[in-house]
Amino acid sequence: MAGTHKADVIVVGAGISGLCAATWLAQHDVDVLVLEARDRVGGRTWSQPLGDDVVDLGGTWVGPTQSHIHRVLRDLDLHTTPQPLDRKRLLQIRGDLSRYDGTIPSIPLLGLLQIETATRLLESRGKRVSIDEPWTAKRAAEWDAMSMEGWKQRHIHTAKARGLIDIAVRSILSCEPSEVSLLYFMWYLRSGGGLNTVAEVKGGFQQDRILGGAQSISKRLAEALGDRVLLNSPVRRISQDEAGIDVELDAGRMRAARCIVALPPHMAARMHYAPQLPMRRDQLMQRMPMGSSIKTLLQYERPFWRDNGLCGEFLSDNGPVHLCFDVTNPGGPPTLMAFTNGQLGRTHSEMPRQERIARVEKHLHEVFGPGAPKPSAVLEKDWNVDPWTHGCPVGMMPTGTMSTVGSALRTPFGRLHWAGTETAKVSVGFMDGAVEAGERAANEVFDRL
Ligand SMILES: Cc1cc2nc3c(=O)[nH]c(=O)nc-3n(C[C@H](O)[C@H](O)[C@H](O)COP(=O)(O)OP(=O)(O)OC[C@H]3O[C@@H](n4cnc5c(N)ncnc54)[C@H](O)[C@@H]3O)c2cc1C
Image (cartoon, rainbow, N blue to C red; front, side, top):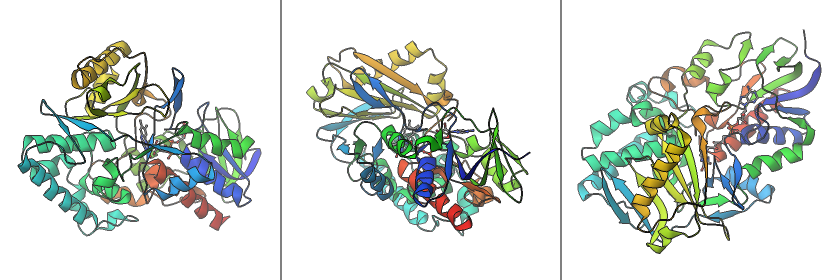
């Protein structure tokens, strides 16, 4: 039985990727409909009030090299504010706490040299990995058989330098080095322009924050699309025949000529498909888990860390806070953003909320003190238990995935096309990648309509 509501194209998911796909199609006079499971748009971006301010519980920063998201920000008349880096940073590694300036962390020289040599090797090998088709690299199978933990054990020999690699992987993918493939990690960094660009503040992907919050992007895109965006509409099943495609909701079906699925692959795997998806695509979706992360936002009466000559940025290989930034908005109350990622993100998730927050506060006060006051307001988001994301920030690939089934990442199946930041060719995993992937899928569909 064919669905009743008709559109040229149905987009599943009103995150940045789905909304950019729909906007591109609407601008090219295509009749498009977006179906979103939640009661809001924005997916992995979610800006919420905290006190009198607005804070980002999901995606936050953009970098100067991310041209796709910057174009969208300009089109939507959204502006950014720089991430402050005017005081010292903190590093806690193997139990030692130290301050540093610039980008060179304070660990012994031997460890720094090892990190430098090993990351150069990572990047020069990465250049042999095609961004479009990383699975075709000559040594794809060999690199895909090794995890980042294996690579670390082979190339880095001092405890502190190993701690820095743990921090880098946990910060970038919110998973443990043992969980991610070397081939995938090289590709991920390459798509962003290298480790420094992906991980750094100045000139990197953490350089600027979006005023009003990152969810403003999706809110404004959805506003322009108007009643072409339907909220509270989880898609359960997608079936296609020679004449069209049916998208099944809890109540009713919609029919279209083509459909773009703009979800992370593990969420796309939770829908049913008829006919069944090609084997490789199905296996890929079974093998792209999300990382694990909890974000805690703490607002204070006074920026006590600045009194101590600190910029609020703090990295730790110990936790419960792995990564922390000062995310105070211009004229807003002093605010810190703390991340608990990877395995600790999972154990933290199982603790009562009050206990989690108390542990985060204690850790921050230990490192930023003395004289740290109690926060005046706290907000927390555990992405691990979010029913429409189930983890964060990105669906990544463990060993043995990219070289075996990775080729199915963007390949359309009949009338079905794939978007979402995971399928991007630039800034994979970031908002910039979500834009590029959405517009690429829209182009693909447009050519076939
Ligand atoms: C804590 C955190 C921090 C991050 N930090 C940054 C950062 O600083 N900078 C950056 O650039 N990126 C960051 N990211 C990543 C960034 O948020 C994502 O890359 C981007 O938002 C992904 O957009 P998307 O449209 O591809 O996917 P999503 O935003 O996940 O959109 C998918 C949409 O599909 C919906 N959906 C799921 N299943 C169904 C279904 N069956 N039917 C209908 N709808 C469905 C979901 O509700 C969601 O709205 C972060 C992410 C998180 C979670």
